Length: 266
Image (spheres, rainbow, N blue to C red):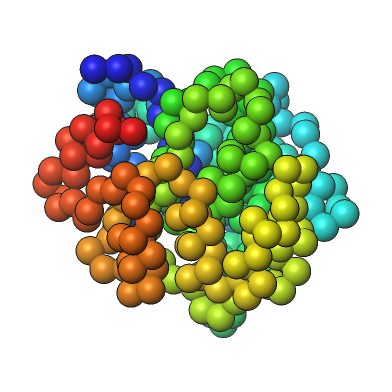
């Protein structure tokens, strides 16, 4: 069995956010495969509701200090890290005052979807990949969890494709029942563009809905996982018809071993 390096990228991980299907998988799956001999790195956003003192987050100075330009504006990239002692596992946090210091995750206290969630998705995806480059850690597999990670497959295949660090990387995208309302900002396509990405690559985001963003992630991924027992019907149809290597939804009791074996098929 090949000792694959696996990069886990998730929009939520417990105990830093409340328990959910996604946050539990993103917490226990990395530990489980690490205990089976894999080498892992794990990333999530440092939302303002993540208590830094209680969770003992601290900044990694050698990784911080880069600026990412989004919509012609510089945004400092801050990297923090915390340890889950029981799991012997570190979690890296992507932080930025403009995007992640508010006390809510995706909606304000009145349940309004944040207008800049599109830019937060861009910043998170690019922030993770740039940090992995700084770590000089070449992942064999990149496993993405949640719509906030949906740009990672596109960026790996179109922007970072000639970076030696990602030359062998395969991308797995897990689809969950995590639909957001309406559409992201209508300028999303323009903001996410980088060298190597064509207008045709992101044409589907003319209307940046959850379904279309999921279709984009499916298109540029190498393998797919159904993370929730039920997902959006249109997304499920595209997923099943994609012809990509696919793992159906797994029960809580056995999913770690199932994912572990799945990784060897990619």
